[in-house]
Length: 156
Image (cartoon, rainbow, N blue to C red; front, side, top):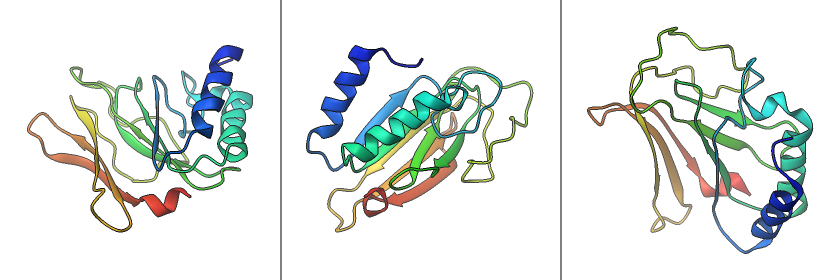
């Protein structure tokens, strides 16, 4: 299992609280397909349970931020989800990924991946009518290597 019963209860309570945006930070990817190593997809009952919890609590605005793959990518999970669940994977801050091309991921939203030291960012413009969320992977020089803007209205 991914979470214990006390963690599931806590998460349900948090998802029931009013919020326009909810960031779920996971040490492993949520939205990528099973990769032979650590990901929520390797625990399909737990992944489904989390999707069902998002639906049953009517939690809007969920975005996942993850790591641990030693490369960066943007994934989108839709299987049974009430709206697209986006997952920005930033990893690693200091290590070069030696293998290059990562494992296949049918849920990879953007074709590009990034394998050099990086950091992930999320910019939110609350001043705009349909709040844009800009998810980015930045290289050591601050250049965007992966970038995706989504509207908060997509997460309803």
